[in-house]
Image (cartoon, rainbow, N blue to C red; front, side, top):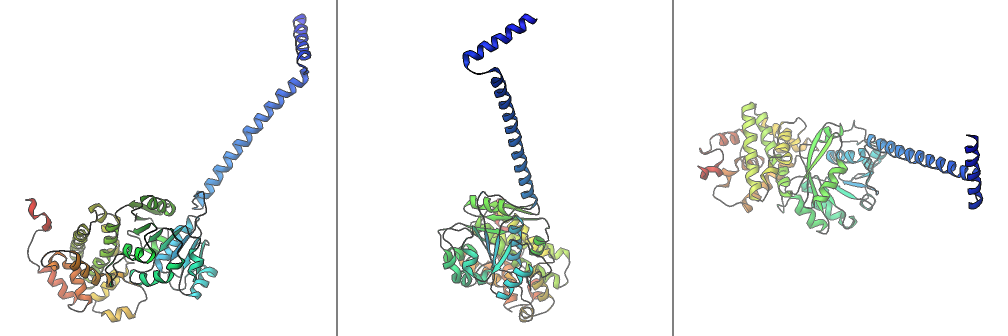
Length: 412
């Protein structure tokens, strides 16, 4: 054994003389290499853990990592504008509210509260407010439009020069313009041009429940489905879920007609009628929505989804619905003038009902359109003072006998 050990030692020494490297240096080299490899493993492992911890912190703080700076501008400081600003701010996206009143902007920035809408809600710190369109819009990645439909054209015309070219716009406004009979898609393109993508958000979504973090599901429609997907990812969270579709017309029709149906549902409640009458009225109203939507090119699945039937149910039966409240007061005997003078909130269905009747007359062919759309026409007559809610109900109950869905009469 001693001879063998000596032989090995001599062999190593001879080898070192040939290579010019001492055995000790050779040994230290391998040890150093091993230590360096261990250190690299520790560093990589530590970096991976730090990245995972950072991502967890981002997720916990509702932050969304695009890989590039994202900013959102919300045009309109009403209830729904505040709600959508809260949605994006909770995802960690800096959000700017464009409002009309300087005092309101100051209160929002200093106290993180709105002085008139949802006054008890503390808004996220990432929300800032301004009255200057250039400040609000110049660096926006996405713009959210939350100005009521009937005021949208004038508002957009005033700020159009400050909207950066190509920046996508998400509209949360619903209705039909009384002067042009155009939907929001028409108004936006006419005011801001066709060189940008547009999207439209709708569904059963009361502003108060959104800011309170109550589970809410909506749909975003856009002909640019990649934009709809990006917006859905940017806005979705544990309490706010966005679905997508390309059926812009279906979403627009549902968002407009549901407010008129809600007015009729409120009148039904104001008259003291029961669940039977309310359920029948809302169901027949949804049939009119579907009939009009199909005529204008909407998809049946959209009209039976969140932006159609879903939004109708929420607006007709929800205690926070402005349109239902307006209809209820009409059913109780108050006049249009009395109701309008006592509230600052906008019931979109009031103007939309008149515009809908004119749109149907312009777009739909056939004899006695009032028999195809008796609820829409009836609500418009009541709002114009041509009949009372009681007379409107009597007219519905005494319509000619026919099949429930007369479009199916040729199926048998």
